[in-house]
Image 1 (cartoon, rainbow, N blue to C red):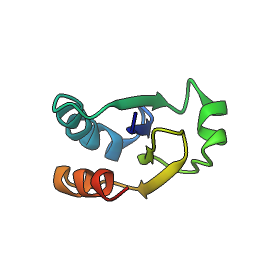
Image 2: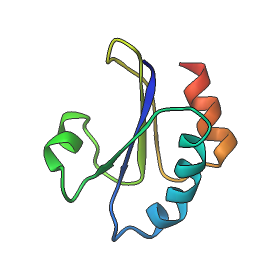
Image 3: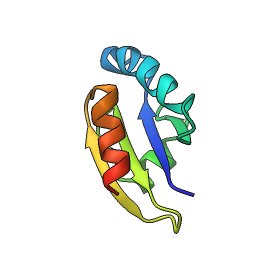
Image 4: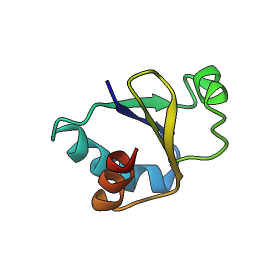
Length: 84
């Protein structure tokens, strides 16, 4: 199943603003897996995440099909998810 992996940190200002957008997206049926990079540095390293917020769109086979670093609007996140 296709999903978004959302990498963030509780100490990141942009993440605090972006979090509610990702929460709204998850309530529409898009699977959003949240990863706190402070608690899961190995997961962040596995996806080569160097700054937050970062979203990675993963296809049903587990392959990365999209990525964005920094804040996006809700429509931009949906567009990234749908293009993959």
